[in-house]
Length: 114
Image 1 (cartoon, rainbow, N blue to C red):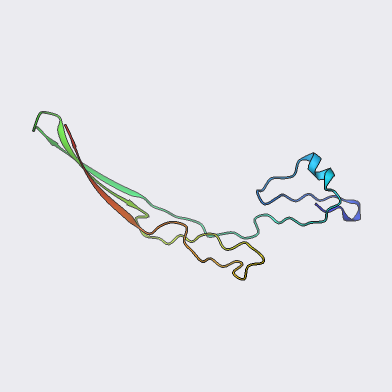
Image 2 (image 1 turned 180 degrees about the vertical axis):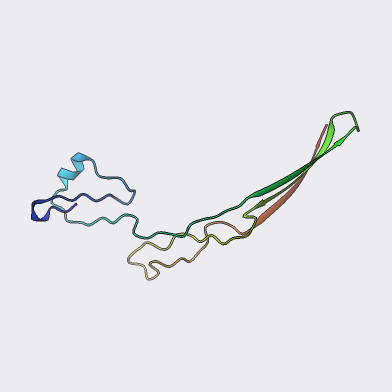
């Protein structure tokens, strides 16, 4: 909020919400500048893939089956970087130093229904 020159400008807080009316007037003499969303991170594109095959059998009785499943998370192993460091006082301000999700993970399963 800035009350210089007889006008009041209200900025949102770090969570993106605007102060309540009572907060505006209790703090109207403060001249602190609050910045919101000043650093944007990269977008994310994640593809999960699941394939299953059902094989029917008549043993031990009708209606028995095997189900085979293969599941892959982040199937194309596309790197997805985390948000940059948003701390002004840090020497790594604006640097992306890690990824947001794990690398490709696969799992297989076999289920017998009877």
